[in-house]
Image (cartoon, rainbow, N blue to C red; front, side):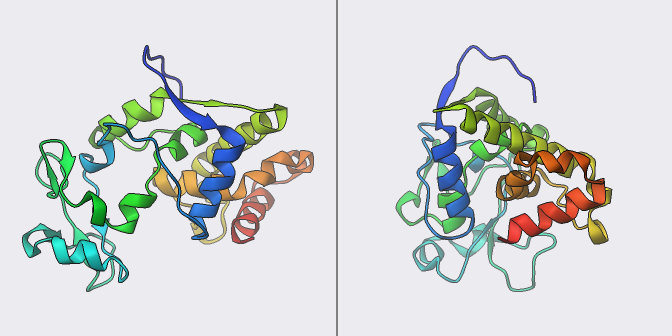
Length: 211
C-alpha cells in the first residue's frame, strides 16, 4: 500500500501495539484506539453483529435498525446501515449509543490495515482508507521494524497465494487477511521460511494462527 498524504496520525509504537492487538484478537484484553473525531467505521457500510453479551446495546437499538446480513447464521442480530453506508445509530456525526456500543465497535481498530499494508476495502471504505493511509507507527528498535515487515509479508502472501492454503481456506476480505497476518507474522521472522514451498508456508501460517 503506497499513498502520500500531508496529514499523518501517530499510530503508536509498533511492537507495543502489536502485542496489544494480538491480545485483543484472542479475547484476552481490549484495546484503546485513538479515533479522535473519525467515524470512518460508522459510515462504511458495515453490518454490526449484536453478541449475546451486548445487552446494553440491544436495549437501545430499535427494531427498525436491525437487518439480516449475508453469510450470517439465522437469528444473528445485526445493526444494518442506511443508503449512504451510515450506521442508523449515528446522528450529526456522533454515536448515540457510544457508552453502550456493541463489543464489535469497541474492538474495531483500522490500524490493522496500516500494519498489513492493505486498504480496508473499496470505495465504500473510503473514509476508513483515508485514516489507514494517515497512520504512522514508530519503532523502539530494529526488532519492531522486522516484525512490521513480517506482518506485511504475511499479508501479501495470504492475499496473493490464497490458492496454496488447504481447502482454499485463506481469507480474501481485507479484515480477515490483516487479522491472520497479525496472528501468524512470526512465520516470516524465521529465515527458514524462505526455503519452504507455498503450501508449506500456508500450513505454517495456519498453525501459527492457532498458537
